[in-house]
Length: 325
Image 1 (cartoon, one colour):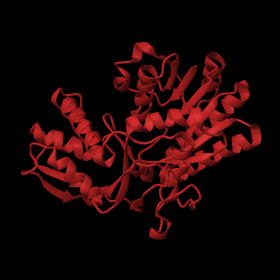
Image 2: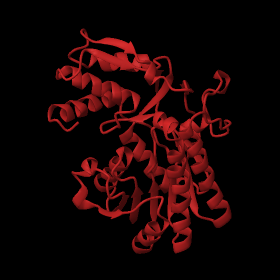
Image 3: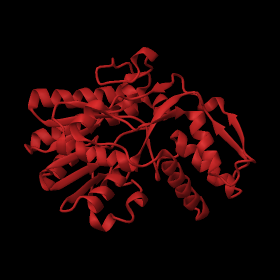
Image 4: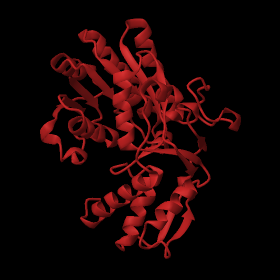
């Protein structure tokens, strides 16, 4: 099958490409990237995928690519995905995620191809839920509290509309927290791991900066996540939306304690809250009900969160040691 991934050079996109090449045989993997996007995440597979320069904000580039590739499956993962950054650049976030998704779906409609399309929404669309609504299922009200979350609601609803109005085979995922090696440094567990790697190398004073440590998250490994995404397009129904999440729930403080115990400097590090890392509005309770997706696919996470953290810390150790960051 011809599989096209938007955001192939990113965190999840690169892992998905690896999974398709290594675990699923017989697929031709294509990717859309911006001309300036770094390709270090796919350096080990770049010769096995076909890359196209394009931009979600340039409809003509998407039409050209879809007309040439004619993919049978599209994974739409490209996004401005940093919640904190969305507060400082709300218009850019909305434009990239909402207008960009509209352009993507419009390009598919215009070229008259008929792929299965995975549109990656987010658990952030649910916002701050009451304890009585835990675990969160797909019927929980959408109450976004960040520009990023608002953009993901728009992306989510566009996918639904294009299925209803034009019969595009869109399937939406609302993925909860997922992590692993190559996770961007702005995300909380990766941010902590990078700081520890720098402290171990003597590149940072033994002070680890944090935001809100009381938030509760359910974590999943990115390698389990991409397996779920493949099962989504293989087994799930177009027009539907599915929560996907791991099975390990803890506070951010508990996560930090696990990570500290993996570090050679655990007894020397001082943990300090940085007011600059506190969001204007925070989502502090995210526990998913993934039963709809599990019943449809039989998926279950297999990688422990301890392994996720260890692999993430080791990744940053290598990046710091060899001066790649």
